[in-house]
Amino acid sequence: MVKLLSTSPLKESRASDSKGLKLRHSVFLFGLLLVAAQLAVDHGATIAFSTAYTGNWGISEQSTLTAANGTTSTSTASTSTTTTSTTNNDNDLQKQVLSLQQQLDSALKKEANSQRELESVKQQLEKLGKLEKLPAGTASSTSANGANGAIAAVDKSKFPFARPPAKREFQEPYDRVVVATKIHGPHQFLLIRQMLCLFTFAYNNRMKYDVIVFTTDPLPEEDVKHLQDLGAPAKVSVVLDSPGLHEMIDNLDPHRKKRFLDRCGANKTTDLDWFSNCWEHSGITSRLAYNWQAEFRSLHVWNHPAMMPYKYMMWLDSDAFAGEIWTRDPIAYFIENDLVMFFDNFGQGTTRGALQENRERFEQAFNKTIRNVRIHEGHLAADPGVGAIQQIHGFFHITNLEWFRTEPVMKWMRILIGEEFLTRRFCDQMAVTGATAVLAPERSWDMRSHAIKLNVFHNSRWDGKEQTKGHFKRYWNEQGGKDKFPPEAATTCTIAAAQ
Image 1 (cartoon, helix red, strand yellow):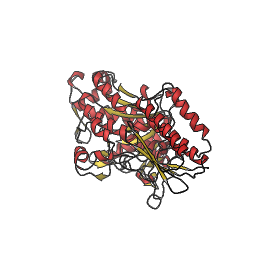
Image 2 (image 1 turned 60 degrees about the horizontal axis):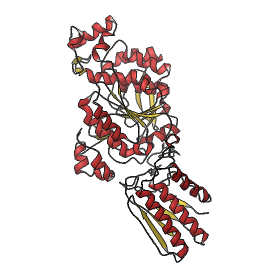
Image 3 (image 1 turned 135 degrees about the vertical axis):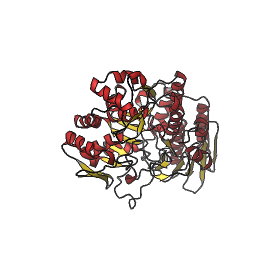
């Protein structure tokens, strides 16, 4: 039996991509190494493999074979060249390995992508079935340019509540998963372009989850096409989230409409646009465009027609930027632990200014009130009573959509909004915190408590916690940020938004 250790598990492609599946050079290299191993075994050698894989970015891959007599054979493959040197005295083995390498080089130069050639490689792998399969997540380390599914180690002394890494971390994607975000319109294109490009390099070029970009004002077709190109190979859809401000106002019942117009100091609907500022009960004004995203995410996103095919949602704000390649798969961890909420940060704002209103809404929705919401042993906890409530940070979290669509949760969302319209007072953070803290605190987990540290940049903080040394452009250009991504990211991603 030959044991194989690798930092890059062979990931099977989706069944839906089986026709015309592009032949990846990593598959050929794996086949090459396995065939070489079998030939060596046939000649009496004992083989151990150690592979360092730098990812599907056109960077070289290197593997070392160590024979029983201590001699080594090193093979390096890239998208343009393949070089083999071997000190093995068996000329037969050398000739057959070189022949296989020539086949690999020829296929790579042709960018072979036929199903027939892929099946040929699969047949070679099947013939070597006595070799042990690659274990999931066997990577012991990862470099900045070499994260291709390597799973970061977990120190149980620092993270006592962390579960073992999910079995399918960075393996085949799960079904019915969507990544969602929102902008208001074309003036925020630079944000979403930057976010999507970094997120793709950090994570989604491996998992290929569908992406939905909600927007209130339509984007030009060329901008939509650009986002789809940046998000490839994942499917990217740009979806309108509103029929328009004036139509929404005019569809309110007369009482709510008058209440809203009075709050905004307007006599009629056409006096307002998305950039109008309206008074809040706290005595401040707030822009309607911002208030709409808060209400949309509180009440409407869960059952939006575009979201109905999906069961799980990763929400990532359009101004939340991946700061490095992800070495943990938060979606796999979320799904395998059967969570309803998995959040990157907690304690973003409190509800001190709305204690009485909160009390009434909690009692009406849940027949109880809560206070002292906190993280306990890695999950949410709350005490009965009335008090200010710390909230889950809304910029980055993963949710179970089917759970949020249940009637007890949706009842809470409807009661929370009540007769208000376009107010930030009862925002998405309060919506998800109230529901999870009351109905499923043990299934609502904090990422950091479970050793998942992804370093997402938002409002000059990493994961909403540590203060950064300046804005993102400075991090990217002056503090080594671009070096934590493959070289292609620096030429593909336009880093124009400072934030």
